[in-house]
Structure formats: C-alpha cells, structure tokens
Amino acid sequence: MGNLSLLVSLTKRNFKLYFKDKTTFFMSLITPLILLILFVLFLKNTYAETLESIVAPLNINLDNKITNGFVSGWLVSSIISTSAISISFCSATIIVNDKTSHSGKDIDVAPVAKWIKNLSYLLATFSTTMFIMCIMLVIGFGYIALMGWYISFLEVLKIIFTTMILTMFGALLACIIFNFVNTQGGTSAIATLVSSCYGFMSGAYM
Image (cartoon, rainbow, N blue to C red; front, top):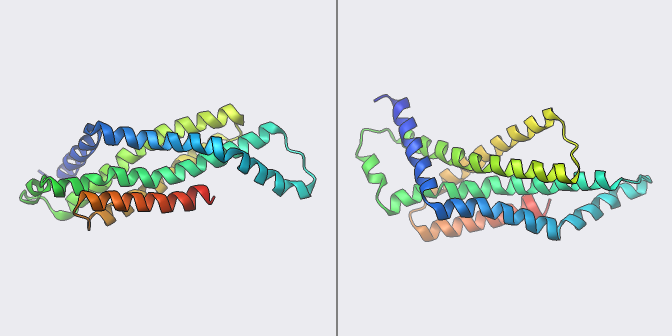
C-alpha cells in the first residue's frame, strides 16, 4: 500500500472515530451555538453602542438596519474566530485518546512512517473542524441575513477562505501541543486554557 493510500486510510479512521463519539461531536457543535446566543444577549447592545459612539462625532445618522447588519457581522466573526480554535482542540483529542487507549500502538508496529501518522491526525482534525465550521457559517450567515444582509458574494468567498486558513492554524496548533500530552487530564486542562484565553482575545476583547 502506497503512502497516499495509507494517509487516506488513517485520515478516514481518525475522522470516523471522532464522529463515533457522539458526546464530543455534540459538545463541539453546541458550544459555538451557545456562545452565539450569549453574545447576542449580552454583547449586541455593547457593540451597537460602540459603533454609534464612533460615528457620532462625524454627525452620521445610521439606519437601524445598517447598525444591526454591521453588529451581527461583528458578532459572527467573533464566534467563528473563537470556534475555529476551540473546536480544533476538541477534534485533536483523538491523538491523546490513541495514547491512553493504546490504540496508536497498532499503528506504530505497522509499516507506517511517523510523518504519515502525524499528517493523518492533522488532516482529520482539519476536516472534522471544518465540517462543524461550515455549519456555523451557515447559521452565522442566516443570522446576518435576518438582521440585515450587506455582504457580497466575493466577500462570502473571502470569509470562507479565511475560515479555512484559521481552521488550519487551529488544527496545527492543537496537533503540535497534543503531541506532547499523554493524559486525558492534561488534554482537558490545555483545551480549556487555550479556548478560554483565545476566546477572550478573539471574542470578548474584539
């Protein structure tokens, strides 16, 4: 079996294992939705007031539709940027799970190069995270359309491309860090720490 076939097989295996764990998948999907609801309930007015304070000195009267559309895009961008990292760390737990359950030893004794194994983890993490991010983008675009759509088709493509780059960054970061973690406790602690810190910087602070 060639290297490409091995890579595809291992990636499929990791992809299926992630979705086999219904609890992890459900939590990965529901967490961004909860964040979106919380942002709308508690930060929407703050964002709107910030926008109005910026344009007030310019003597510009913004229509409510413009304000709502801009603020909704602001909220969705915060959720997307935060979720791409937090979900990547949830998806990459398969790396540590293989260590703790010793499932990875079956791969180690097989004639599989280490770089193929590591790359399969990365591709699977990116694929699973991007799958959920696509769902979040659909929900986000739906929310923006409800509040006041103002995004062109080209801008939608740019948003999707940017989301892919951000997701790849999250997948790389998660795979590199979890490569040095050997316990479930360490996995939970690191995932919580990174998600909290990045969520604050990319979400609340923004």
